[in-house]
Image 1 (cartoon, rainbow, N blue to C red):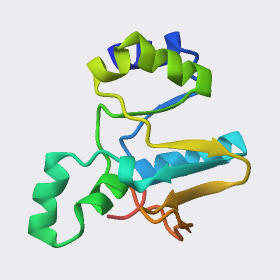
Image 2 (image 1 turned 180 degrees about the vertical axis):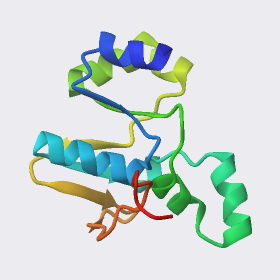
Image 3 (image 1 turned 90 degrees about the vertical axis):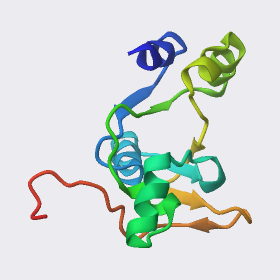
Image 4 (image 1 turned 45 degrees about the vertical axis):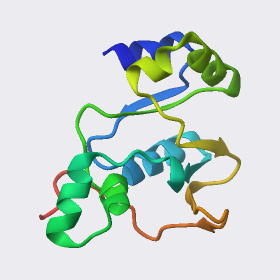
Length: 133
């Protein structure tokens, strides 16, 4: 609740829980906004549960971080000024918020690799409600 409040207080344009997977929910935001979300892979937090699951199934931890749903995680979009104010307020650090990318002209989601190249994922993965499991 505190993270959502901090986003709103700093002018969040979009705020969504990432219960269906970061990539899938970023794609939903991009489609609804008519914009492209660029996710910088080096900035995506990887939870210890993703690392543990990786040991069991062999899928890289970052892939779990991108494609698995996680309750109580938020994806928000702020203007540059709003993001700067949020960081300056100390709330971002206190609440464990991380900047993972940016919104640019275009459509869909692009993944910015460590070398600066962009990948446009064919599938977002994630949890599709009502789809056979």
